[in-house]
Image (tube, rainbow, N blue to C red; front, side, top):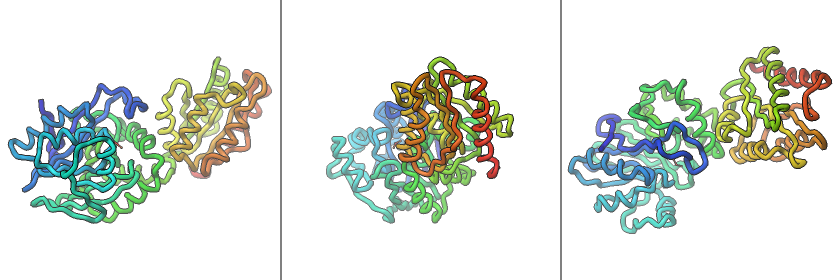
Length: 403
Ligand code: FEO
């Protein structure tokens, strides 16, 4: 059964929602699903902007057939070739034998790498090229590494719609709610939008900045991303988030405490630290057990907040493995410009604090690690209170100037 929405005159959403996939890219939990957005323009010529994941291909074909209503498909604009959008290209070409693909040279190369039969069906475009489909003229804008090297975005100069590929996307299925003004984005969507951006595109901040700079030169009225809601109002809200995230600036002053605790003693210590921080005037504190929280949520919070406390037990004379994994992921995704405080625990040969400090200072960019550090031997006792208080004071003092 078809399931489509009109976006604006001549333009329809013909994508699909996916509630069955447990792990996006087989790595990121998506408890609220995801949408694969595809858009169909009915002009003198008909144009499909991107396709969907293979698992949603049948839904896409039913939607296209319904909207075309007997017309043929003339063009398929591929902004992004990653299989969650590109996997259905071949099937669309088979169903519509006259359709031609418009895309970048690199995307054509990737289509061949993925084994797609597209010979004689592609037309390559580059930055600044335009195409007129009748009433609508579109311009193609290169967007390399947002999120793959072949990516481009397409701007419809007639109606101001930007087909933004992975940019401005979000996890979560749409479930009928197509537009940003049909959801409470700041309440229900922002966390999943941030988790999507930071984990998928977070590494490529400078490339996102380059795209934002180009976007600033055109009069965008509608943003049509490949995942999540279409933006037709309040664009500045989301552009501002993207600007902050891609510059690695925190959204809020606040403290994220990430701890590893095998028997509850480190958890107890950071619980006391959280209390002290709040007592000293910083109530924006959140705590996460690194063993229980998927690292994609931790990365998202690390982008949101200004301060991070890492509390790790010593394990095989090293950092507790899930904590090491979080550190490695922060490095991979370019997390930077954060203030970090350290808590270490070890029943003998306590080393995790020293090792975390070495990692932060030598492997990551612009991480300010506070000198004060709390060392626990097995469990907190009265002798640790002075250090705990000093650590809390150091954290709050480092926040206060910017409050
Ligand atoms: Fe949603 Fe980079 O693909």
